[in-house]
Each structure stands twice: as structure tokens, then as C-alpha cells.
Length: 58
Image (cartoon, rainbow, N blue to C red):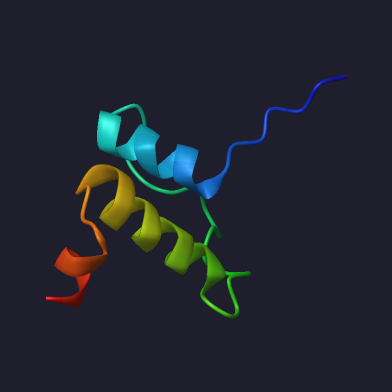
């Protein structure tokens, strides 16, 4: 039996691609230390916006 689990980054990309409308229910409920939010933000900045370290500092 194979489980189909997606990372938060994959889910976010599906939202950006229009394959999903939103994050699944309770996605952020267990994100106590904002680790998922940090990962999504890092993905946005580094992969989608392609900002480098200098651009981030500005």
C-alpha cells in the first residue's frame, strides 16, 4: 500500500498552478512553531521569486 503524501511546498505549488484552491483543512493547526509557514515562505522567496541573499536583505 502506497500513501500519497505531499510536502507543504508541493501543496503550495499546486495552489500556485491552480490545481488546488487552498491548503487542506487543518494544515496550520499543528504548525505550533510556524515551521510549515517558514518553509512556504522560504519556498516563495527562493524558488518562485528567485531572490538571492542580497535581494532579501534589501
